[in-house]
Each structure stands twice: as C-alpha cells, then as structure tokens.
Length: 504
Image 1 (cartoon, rainbow, N blue to C red):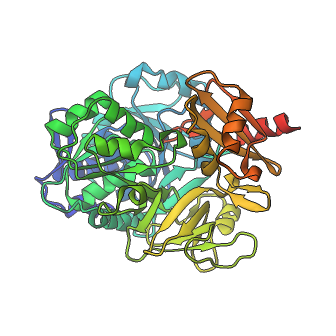
Image 2 (cartoon, helix red, strand yellow):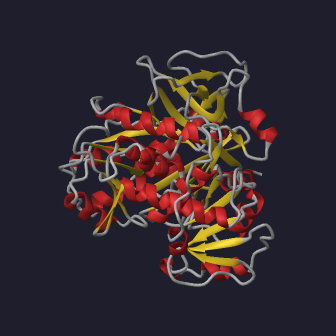
C-alpha cells in the first residue's frame, strides 16, 4: 500500500526540507490523514478523481497520499498548462475536486478556470490565499488539515491511484493509470537500485511532481527514508546553493537542468552522481562538460507507462557508455526485449528494433481507453514502447529514438540522431532536428553563426553515406516545442509536416 511509505518510516525522520521548515515523515502522514478526511467530506471516495494543478509544494504530496488513503485517483496536471489543456484533462478525467495555488507566480488560475466548461468539477481546494472560480465550492487547504484524521485507509494494492498524461502533440493525451502497488514497489526498487538507502543520503527535488521523472525520484526518496530538499520550481542559482548548503548526494534532471547548473558554477563535491535524460542532440557533449565540472552523469530510461528511473547505467562504467540513454533495469523483476517491427522476430544485441518492457512498475491501463490499452500491451504483459532500441551484451539496452522518428533511407533504418550529431559538428550549427519526408531526410537547424544551405549539405557529404544526406537543411529561429512535466519537447510532428511541404 502506498501510504506505508510514510507510515512505516520513523515519524521523527525528516522527509522534506522546504526553505527553513522540516516536514517529518510523521507530519506528512498525519496531514495526509487529515486531508483525506477533508476530501471525504467533499464527497471524494473510491475511484473518484482529484486533479492536482500545483507546483512542488508539500501540499502536492499530502493530497496525493490523501487520495491513496481514500482509494481515490490523483490526476497530475502540469502547472505550465493553460486553458485548453486544463479543460481537456480535468474535464475528460471527470475530476470531482481540483487543487491549485492561486498565488503561484501571479498566474490567474481562478480566472483561467472561470472560462472553462467543467461541469463535473464540484469543488476546488485553495493552497494559499486567493479565491476560487465562481460557481464552484472553494475550500482552503488549511481547512482540510484542520479536520480529524481519517481513521482507516480505504485504498487497496490494486486500486488505481495516479494518472499521468502522455505528452503527445497531435491529439489528446492518454491517461496513464498506475496502481498503489506499481508506485510503491517501484519506489522501493528505486531506493535500493539507486543506492539511496545509504546513510547520509540527501536528494535535491527540482523536477516537478506532476511528471513521472519527478515523482519517481520523490517516492524513491521516501521509500529510502532519505530527506529531499524541495523547491517549487527549478532555478539554477538556487539549486547550486542548495547542493552546498544541504550537502546533496543525489538528484536527477533534464539535459537543460544539468547544463544550467554547470553554467551557474555549481559545486558538485558532495554529489555521488546524477541521472539525466540524454535526449537533446544539441547537448551531446553535456556528460563530458559535467565531468570536467566534477559531476558524474549517467543515462536513464523511463516513461509514463513504466515510470521514470526504470533503467540506468552504473557509475562505474566509462563515460561514453555511461552517458547513453537507456540502461540496466532498476527492478530485478523487470524484463525487456527488442523486436523487429516488420517481421516480429526477436532481436539480439546490436540489432535495432522496437523496445518491449515489463515489470512491477508497469501501468495498469490507459484510463477510459480500452482500445489503446489493448494496442499497447502484448499478450504476455509487455508494453510496446514505440521506441527504437538495441540490446547490449551486458544485460542492458540503448534507447535510440522514437520509432515514429526512425528514417528509412536507401533501404536502411537510420536514427535521426546520427545525422544530427554530424551536422552539429559544423561550427555554425547550434541545434539540429532531422525528420523524414517520404524516403528522404530533411534537417532543421538553429544557427550560432551565418551558414548557407549548400555549405551545410556539403558538410554532410563529407562525413555521411550519400543516402543519409538531407534533401533540405532549413534554418529556423527556434524549434516548435510543447511543454511537458518531464521537460520541453520538440514537436516532431510539426517538423515532419513542414518537411513534407518543402519536399513537395
């Protein structure tokens, strides 16, 4: 059961460090019981949805564990989302209650909500001073904490407890439903697999709870009984000071977070190692830069369906191998394989195909979408990840790219990253994204210095096989992106549409 992460810990042990305030395990457990009683009095019961549209505040975790005690389902909503996304997620999930922080970054959350059609939403919980939207019952978060503790937990191990939203950019996101068992077991595996049970472990929590990357770290720290230094959002200067002040030993982050910490001159002497999402071709040298700054990075793999931190590379590997996305599974019960998407044949090490994964961290289903669930799951319980990957001889796998981004050029499967990496060797190229347009590659670049298309194509011809040379190389001021709880993602679908228009 998920609440046992709090209930079994030593009550006086610190769980969260927030500014100068310490939240012990006992305090989080007690507040989650009181919040559960308060939500119950708002009509929340088993299976009901509670949307959490909050930054990293203790209230996020308190309300999340309150839902677990009630057998309710928390719906994670990114604070970067605005009207259209919130209306879709809160409305389509059927949330009965929505919690938000009215004063966060002076964003008019109440004004945004007032414009939305949310017929099934009955109440809002205000975390901090402010007002709720007209027509909805508003209850202060402090009022929930003033209620008596819920006498007993009503959730079960197989109860759905959390919905993540997928980060698709061309259609409505799917609702990835996890059970209490999948989250609690993965938290325990992460605590052990990442070495966070070691005495003296302190984590920095700069990743948002609303995404699996941030929540997997937060729950793993709780399972380990290790304190986390929590900040509402990531700020490189603030994070650099936290690393020193609290003698942080471990943390994970996006490529951008790591790059900004290095640029801020952070002191990493107490940090044993940090996991990062090695997905940005523009930061291909990030791990080497980090090493020179005293920070040892290791690549990770995860997803909403499997949870973040599903796999990692060990710190004792040499840098080039350690920096790859992918890894060896965190759970000893996790299984994975690679299949040829054309023939269905299972592949061996060094052969690229679709990654299929299974294990105790796996989602239960796509909530409300039985067809998508059937399409994603194999008969023997693996998730078809839609990722191109290859197995390694040492019991791991390397993530290469999204399967939909793979190019078939000259009769061969080609990962866009191969072309992107070569283009970025050109001194004028700052960033690069390569997509397919039929049987041809098209590259989009951002530039740090002037360069014409012919010169960039000539550069590609000097180092790439002829069939890999992009048909067009187009300079953009910036790549089209979409916000995600796990980082900003480039809209590959939009780039593919642009590429097709260029070729046609």
